[in-house]
Length: 200
Image (cartoon, rainbow, N blue to C red; front, side, top):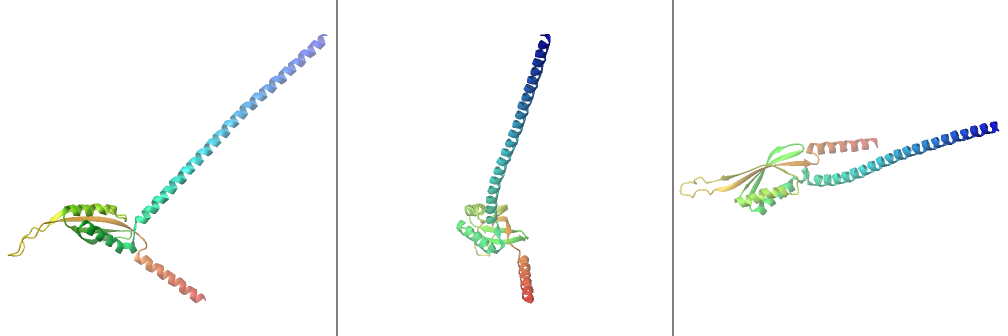
């Protein structure tokens, strides 16, 4: 009987230890699963954030590309310089002033002009103001107003009337190829054509 009790106690102890081990293993698996789930959630959140940033960058890139097209369209091409001069002349005529354009500086990527206009002050103000709304990208660097005339004329003639004058210095970025680049490009093309003819 005593042996039976000892065996029962031993079996109960073994079962208890086995149950405790199984419970501990189960708890460990639950914690491991929870940690793995949290890690996966963090990875998913990181991927979602990257996708959001990618979408934002793509949207920003599209906006920048649209702005780039607008700026490129506004930059004066070298071949359109005559049209630019005509536009300045038309602007002066619409404002009711007389205007002359003088090239001050001619660079590879920009030109600087002196616009001299004469007329009534309100008309000169309108002319200078309208320079800022031209379809061409220009930088109005300097504007000054002065008066000319007022000196006595020849003996027996009336004095010269005082007339307001506006001087505006504008800088214009230029696009397109330089004349030298166009010539070099044409020469290179002719050279290739000549080489092709010789090969034939």
